[in-house]
Length: 126
Figure 1 (cartoon, rainbow, N blue to C red):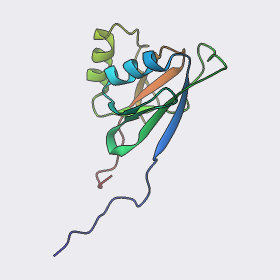
Figure 2 (cartoon, one colour):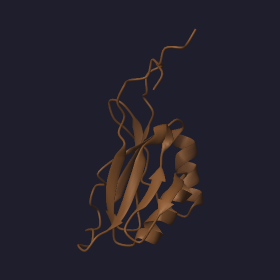
Figure 3 (cartoon, helix red, strand yellow):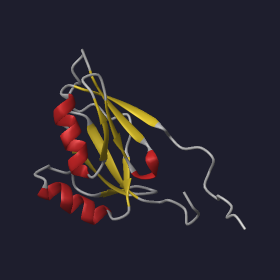
Figure 4 (cartoon, helix red, strand yellow):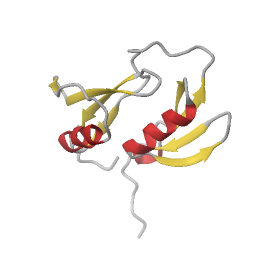
């Protein structure tokens, strides 16, 4: 008997990030643990858990430092992730707590502020 797929029927497919330096931003994201899928002068495609693709594209308008990234990230172990980014030489913010998450921020090479949250995924298949 075939198993029933209990995951929600929709997922984010692609998120686009305009970068000042595509190669530097790509290395940054790969160092965080994303997977390289495709690379060309026009676009880089890297993969996150669940199959979501982050498309990194060059921008003609430089990113203003401190601009909030158009996405946030979620990890299973926020403490281990913060330790890992510290070991990478990044300067994560202090851990904070809000109603749903423990979180911190890091800055990518273009100047985007990226929030990294603790997971609150349900116990159901995602």
